Image (cartoon, rainbow, N blue to C red):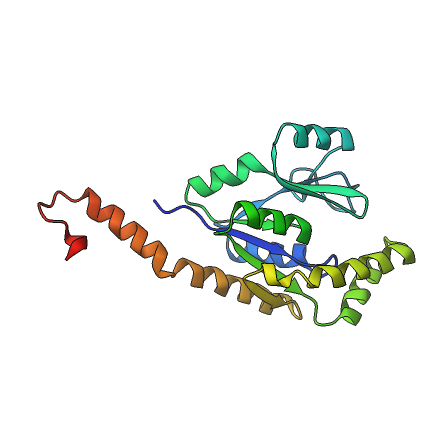
Length: 211
């Protein structure tokens, strides 16, 4: 059985990562969604264990000490991290899993899982990104300015990603990510690995793979 694919989707705050992932979950029900842990306060409508595992700072630090996180980063005063065990178990079962994480965390995951598929979600423009962040109505002007400054820094890390998708329209962005996933599943390396494993199991007197 082939190992599942790890898809990492990240981008600046306010670019629409959560919205795109939600659309992918509806369109691709077999795609496993990794739930991150965070110390930030829940937003309206968010549920523990669904949107995030909401933890206190002390609880999160215990997870770090116990090496229970695949990656973690501090962003705008809060910790974010990916529980290690759930991701590794899902991949070993041959299931695809998508990680919606911040850019800092994605770079760390790349170091541990270079075979992963890394997708950077871009806004149509910085003006549009500012309007999206301002439209939340939950951040002060100082926080908004800081997020935009961080967004520019994060876009300079685009070279660490395999693909870039502009989120100008949710359905289009979702379709592009789905197309990336389909293309990765069709790569010859995955078929060759499975083929040679099957040949090794055949009771042949001659090694067909060496012809």
